[in-house]
Length: 164
Image (tube, rainbow, N blue to C red; front, side):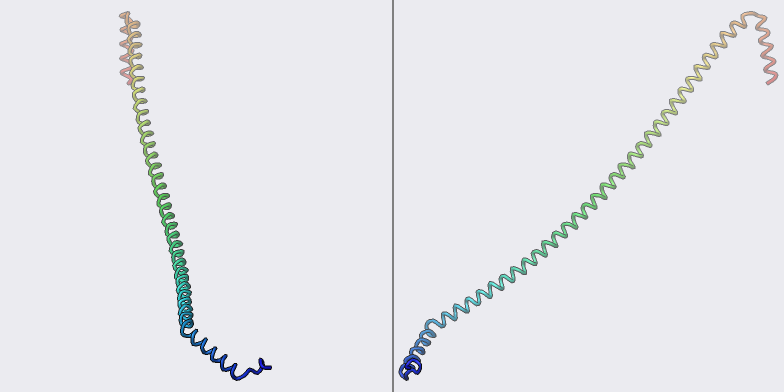
């Protein structure tokens, strides 16, 4: 039963040993342990703060990246639209120039054809007139070889002149 009801001496020495242990621990171990715990708490707090800052920076960088990507897409779209407009304008200008050139060539060809047509008609008239003169010379030589026929021809011409 001595364990259940300890003696006064045992309680005294146990209390003294406990107080001595608390004093030694308080003097030599408690302060370094508390300081290490405080340092550990500070380092954990700094690590959490650093991780939070890094997370915020990552969000900010991601937002910046998305914003830059959107700006790049918008700029690309603007450049593509501008390129399409320039392409369409150049095609339209080329079409207009080609149409004008074709019209000019057609007009030149028409003028050239008209000039050649007139030249051919003039040449044909000249050939017909020359042939008519040659034919008339031939007929007149043949008809007017006799003086009597000459007299009749002159009388006939005079009659025609009076009717006109």
